[in-house]
Length: 321
Image (tube, rainbow, N blue to C red; front, side, top):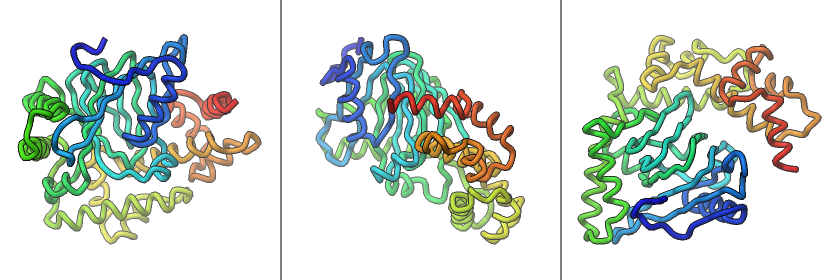
């Protein structure tokens, strides 16, 4: 099932699922796993192995399971306080990765950059096999220079860049026969190779100033999500730039201001619904997070999460019972 690559331990059944999810959290950060559909926990199969090598600076895990969904929420991010990037290589099977306003389909050999400090979801069709290489935030930014990161844009295996990066990532996962300086050099070469695939130049003369404006805009959005009057004009005025330039900054990340605000509000509503008391009305939660049209909220929520807000609440209440 796992080709010639040996993993241990092997996790099976309900007890194996609990142990696998615990070990996943210890190594990769807290994720909530949804077991395979049909037989459920009884049919669970998983495996995990840490990166092996002589360079202690390298870290990562190979993760195999037949879970159908992995989710990392803001509450998980606050709880474990991990701060780095994952370079995820789809070794076998396929996955749909969702983070912020973007989605990426990963087939065998494809890679994508994941920011562990942001909520994310992975959806799997069947057995999935992934290598996740930890990339320290500082190390990546040092090699990017004044460039913006691009998330959820797959480096496909069929491309020259993706194919080479995939081979280097696999080589790093079994670098036991490399000297520390050799594995360190290979890791540095991988980061340089990734540069054109996971970042883009910031338009405008003042690149560092543009990056700071984008960060400030996102912070203000986080602070004022409850304000239904939050808009591009008010944000632009608050950070000292034009509305046109603000739209350009979000466009460079593959999204719009409106989509970004909507995604953040939907995420907060979903977290609140899953944790709120049964008597708390869903409409009140939607209004509290800045929605002023319940019909629009319900449609957007179902489009984002695949089920209605009411069914989403029922799903979590059933799991808790």
